[in-house]
Image 1 (cartoon, rainbow, N blue to C red):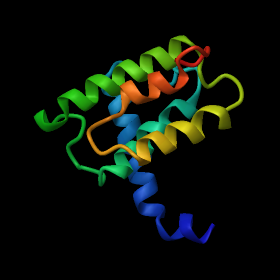
Image 2 (tube, rainbow, N blue to C red):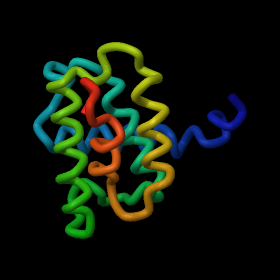
Image 3 (tube, rainbow, N blue to C red):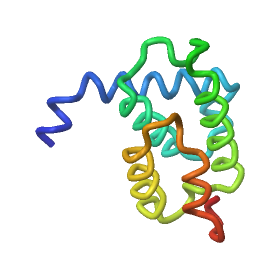
Image 4 (cartoon, rainbow, N blue to C red):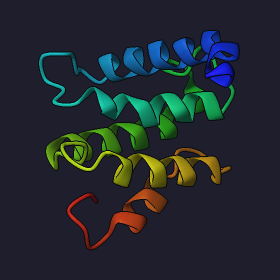
Length: 117
């Protein structure tokens, strides 16, 4: 809890930025079946240093495409509808160990053969 309290401003910025990004894809609370879909995006944004212009910068076009694809696939496959820890922990680990953009390929590969890819 102390770690969360200490980093609260960055955590809330990451969540807000993730929501803003998902909104820019055309999603809203009416068509998102699980708010937990926002968590990996917020974690990724925090992981890369919370850039202020992520949703509009040309530097992040490829990342946005990959995030949108992951988000859409996860939403359609209802990835977050059960056993949340079975998704969040591995995705967090994959993001934490990535250093070259949003790790869509690695996430898909990890869950290949399951109903979560």
